Image (cartoon, rainbow, N blue to C red; front, side, top):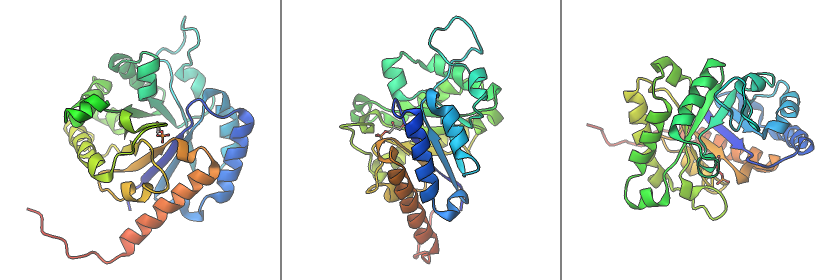
Length: 268
Ligand code: 13P
């Protein structure tokens, strides 16, 4: 079974104390075999990274940051650099989330600088891309996210791109009032992203889905061949919720691989 990614970004939520409690609860609830075939990650706010690293200990949970600046240091009041993040021994850095693009003026050009800086410092960039409701209505979802990926990865070598993760997060699917993409709707966009990544020489880059993932839709989304992971917000902001999602996905994938393959129509 190839590695399946399941992670949660906490956005602007959780104090240090809440982080410690969440991780302790999560560790107590993680299925024993969660570390095999699964890459689990949490992305707390900057202020909770030190506590999160300590609380994770040896548990099979990767740690990420929600953003970073592209410069190592300088006159950028309020920003955090890769050099600073290194002290927390983070594994991932989330870049280009649509909330950052919308509220904090992130552009494809600055995201490209950040991806390069993250790679330079040995972090695994988790590049978020997403289509707007207007792009979706115009049938331009695939084109919109492929454009974002190409601009974010411009100037990178194939091996650098291969160290990245991509998350497809439809803007219309994220957060309160978001409508989750159905597996059928997500499929062609994931396929378009896989095709583009192959063209860029990095066919192995995992493409995760994010946007109103919950206990009801997680198994079906995870069952899509073109979906290599789930990036979860609200439904995983409690340790119980995250552990339940992990168990649900693991059970569904186990059932799918142990069911004898039905007669499949020949392709081509
Ligand atoms: P929700 O799962 O709360 O819709 O958030 C998704 C998200 O933005 C993950 O980065």
